[in-house]
Length: 188
Image 1 (cartoon, helix red, strand yellow):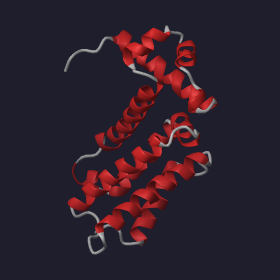
Image 2: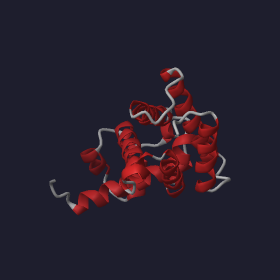
Image 3: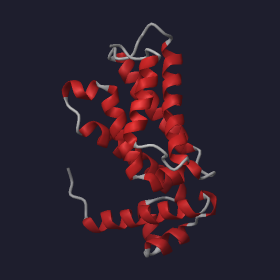
Image 4: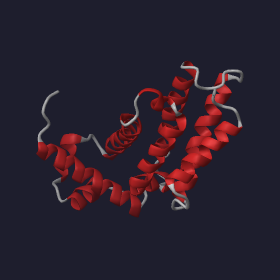
C-alpha cells in the first residue's frame, strides 16, 4: 500500500470538516467552494486538487463515512459474533452517535437526497448478503423482505437522528432487533 502524505491527509480532513460544519449551518445549494476554502483556511485551488467540485466532495464524503461505518461495525467482529445481527446494529448506532454532526446535516439538508439513497443501497446490499448466507428467513418474498428491512432500518436511523437521538444506541439497537425478531425476519 503506497504511503499517503500526511499533509494531504490533513488538508482533506480540513476540507471535510469545513464542509460538514457548513452543511450544519446552511443548505448544500448555498455552499460554495469559496465558503469551504475560507472555513478550512486553505486556498480554493487546493480544494480543486482533490475534488472536481462541491458535488464530488459531497459524494466522496458520503462514501467515506458510510464505508467507515461499515468498517467500524465489522472490524471488531469475528466468527459467529460477526453473523449476529444485533451485534452489528449496536456498533452502527454508536457510529451514528459519534458522527452526529455529519449525519444530522446530511439528513436535514434539503439539497442532499443522494445520502438517503446511498444508505438504502448500502442496507439492501447488506441484507441481500444475509439472505444469501441463510441468516434471513427465506419463506417470504426476498424482494419484499429486503425492501422492508432496508426501509425500516434507514427510516429508524433517520427518525433517531432528526429527533436529536432521544434514546441510547443500545436502546435503539435492541428495539430494532426486537422488531425484526418479532416479525420472524431472521432464522434462529
